[in-house]
Amino acid sequence: MRTDLAVIGAGPAGLAAALAAAARGVRVALVDAAPAAGGQFYRRPAPGLGARRPEALHHQWRTWERLRAGLEDLADDGLVIRLPDRHVWCVERRPEGGFTVHALLGPLQEEATAVHADAVLLATGGYERVLPFPGWTLPGVVTAGGAQAMLKGGLVLPGRTVVVAGTGPLLLPVATGLAAAGARVAALVESADPRDFLRYGRALAAKAPEGAGYAAGLLRHRVPFLARHTVVAAHGTERVEAVTVVPLAGGAARRIRCDALAVSHGMLPHTDLAEALGCRLDGLVVAVDDEQRTDVPGVWAAGESTGVGGAALALAEGHVAGRSIAARLAGRDPDPGGWSAAAKARARMRRFAEVLDRVYVPDPHWPDRVTDPTVLCRCEEVTAGTVREAVDALGARDLRTVKLLTRAGMGWCQGRMCAPGVAGVAGCALTPGRRSLARPVPLGVLAGPGPAAEEPPATAPAPADDPARARPRTDTRTATHRRNP
Image (tube, rainbow, N blue to C red; front, side):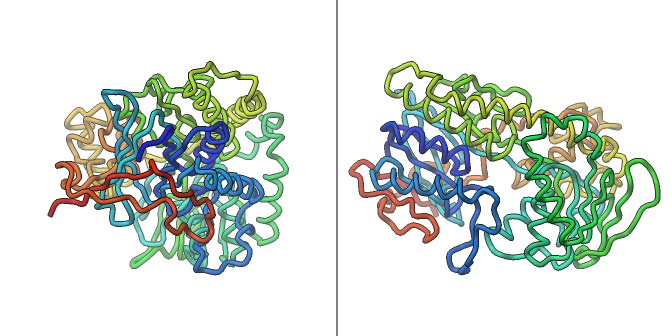
């Protein structure tokens, strides 16, 4: 398939960019791993579940409806073609110019497909940071975002009695959402100090009504709120049965019975594709200019990959990127005045995100509470004791050396889950992974093209809850290759 712009990721940033670019005549392929557009933030129940009020799980449903309506209109005009269930593993720069987006099809991810585009927008989002503790690998321990995804997408609760713990703005909506859906939330355990919010009251004022709404939900459902506390262990045999919580200022530990623990310590940006393309990183985020351009010509980035800041920031960045791309592809210098409102919102939300980063800081002493038998890397079953031995006895001083000496981070997730924990226990900086491939790829796909297969036509049935369906186009054929036996 050949197109003007390939947008990778159909969350808030990708949707806003696709709409802004397509509204100005750019042909857009919206490539996403999920079966329905919206990303984690706008995740909806599967159509077969028959949810009567899916909007009850969202506080920005009207924004989603506007995005969905815009997608539908532009799809009908043939300007946006949505390609769901595509798991992108590499973006390749072509010698003759432009890019090839390589992806694997469907849940099995064994069949390859490619999209050729003149420009690429990386809207790959972020993933949760989970810091390990004894018992964190027990069944029933999930990420806070995972619990939210179960509820939004499957109308399923992670357990009947849930503890929500960690730090970050995600914990409030997860706790109130689970309680409203019928779970007994035994406690919301937050390591942040509420007094810090008062220090930054002016910067946080715009979000005060939203925060007050969540607080009212906690009171209504009688959810205990334990500020300046942290979970130090999960207990159980077949699954989690209880957690131990301690106050960070000192004091007696308490044991809270539960059958599920939803835990999160903030978000980290997905930068794998940007790293493989050679885009410059600023710390852990993709560096971009005022147009959301990376330093690789033809590549833009928006959303959590350029700095975690929430859906409103992602929408603003995506809009700026889409308008910039439309102008650049037409050979014009973009007019920043055309996106001044989005630029102002972007600046405001970035300042807000900076304040949240100061407020929501994990307990700096958490590595001291991780016992040597605690597994840090699930894929390779590497324990904290093994990592400490690599540092103390073998002289490892950085994350890469720890990985080479212990195999921590060499498994299926390639360190996405364990890298923050390994770095913390090792006492070294968390650094980007610098992976050539963004996800595991079958050897048959890497070995070379097999028998060509055609991409399903653009008029193939789309999920019932996602009406963004493209009309037939003569230039939307994509070669796919089956894995060699």
